[in-house]
Image 1: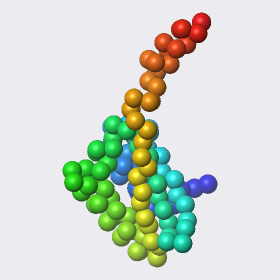
Image 2: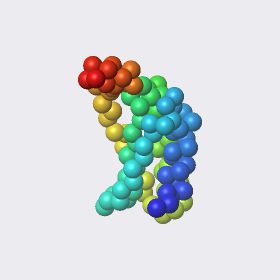
Image 3: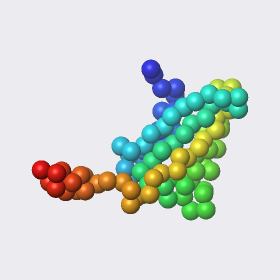
Length: 102
């Protein structure tokens, strides 16, 4: 299924903003309020996405709202809470566990 243009715009903005672009996931759903775009990024990139005093995410929301107005749709953005970095297994942790098992 092809992504709508506004999802690609949001994805491009965020991937060029963060240090882990491969971890960027955007899910789109429709509800009674319009289109809801949920953003999930690497935990280390949360600060970059939100920005100082929330100014970066506010600017992204303004851009997306403008795109929504042009397309007669209400676009809402929600940032999904990442799991804490301590719970994410790194490749080194996985290798150590595999060595212990063998």
